[in-house]
Image (cartoon, rainbow, N blue to C red; front, side, top):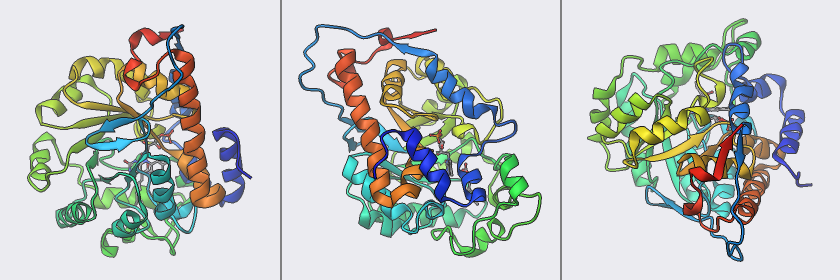
Length: 359
Ligand SMILES: Cc1cc2nc3c(=O)[nH]c(=O)nc-3n(C[C@H](O)[C@H](O)[C@H](O)COP(=O)(O)O)c2cc1C
Ligand SMILES: CCCCCCC(=O)C(=O)O
């Protein structure tokens, strides 16, 4: 039976997944204090509605970098959806398409880019980590373009995977039957095979991620694709300014769901300064702790163009595959549509800074 709230999906998912997998999905870095801090930042924001506006028809639709969406909502890139369900990203793509939501496919997806595209009826973006082996990136960009992906998302907050205590304690490694099938097996070998007290994910990243890249390297990627380029994991206005200078099309304002820099500023707190810094010169997506339709409205009022939702999609997937993801998205979209009506904001463009107060 479908759950009514995302909180219920979370509880259901926990009961269905092995404890080390649950810990990998849910866990954070270091003290894990950022898991609740991201939520608290959104909870501090209250909505200020307008009244006597005609809301008999509300239209949540938007266009983001050429991708037409039913609402300003996308699924954040997350590795290995098969950890949650055997159909993995193919099931997620089917659900995202049905809901009119964007799906950002992780470089470490457990289904091929082509199979995911075949299942998708909505827009797909491809997320990359900058691997030392640049031939892999070139090959992925070509495959993404051929399969109709509409943008590239380079994650810039992870020169390595941070220390995550749950994964270290569990000696977490990607289970043998699940693979990052879009990347050469040799590049991925360190992510398999656990060792007590060490996360194979973290070990793999230290071996395979290129921690030396800087702004100048973006030109190398730009020269290899005509797709829009998005940077994910920006929190500083200075970096937002640089991104605009380097021709980046959109930023995902994110602290990686509390999984990278411990004590990093929550995305909702970082967003206002970034909005000021970019001054409309690139699109902005808020990522992290989005759990209610009202959070989408808060993000728009802060100046974002859209939001990404992460873990809840995997909760839906663990609960009932494609149907579960579709239902998680439906809950968020229904809530958002109701917030539009009650806020007196029948179009996405009606949300502005006067619609929120901090308390
Ligand atoms: C299980 C899991 C895997 C993730 N894998 C990736 C990834 O491959 N690439 C990436 O850029 N971010 C990854 N992230 C971070 C998400 O894209 C996103 O920033 C975060 O989950 C948002 O927070 P939320 O889960 O509170 O919505 C992952 C997050 C989780 C929970
Ligand atoms: C060997 C795969 C590394 C996956 C890292 C995924 C990720 O970004 C996360 O937050 O977890």
